[in-house]
Image (cartoon, rainbow, N blue to C red; front, side, top):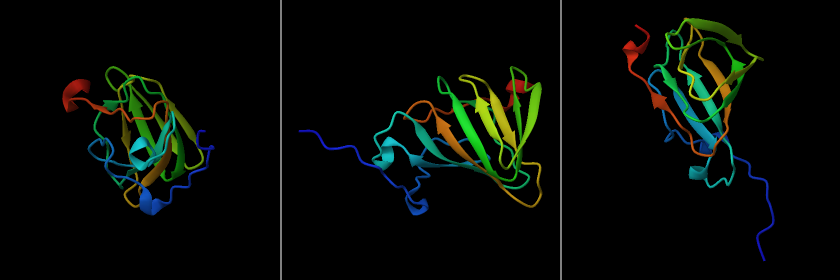
Length: 134
């Protein structure tokens, strides 16, 4: 007989920084196989400090949905970084699979923080060369 389904609560002290990272940011896994959570999605927090920007990257086959918890972020994307939009606390963001992008924190005072959900259980982060948008 199989185990009954159960709800898992993951508290902040359990979040795992040992997940794939991009320079200029911090990802903390909350729902992932590494934490013993059997799910078809990955979820966690994403934070960028004041005045910082991430490296250019994409998430392979994963689609990403993010909810901006706090702060303001500028997101750049495209083959040459030619598109941009700003997101503030309360906004949702959708990032399609394989789309090169970067996040920029224009604030000099506060970090921005997102709740992120990805479409597969294992995070995919493909960091690209900094000169790709030259």
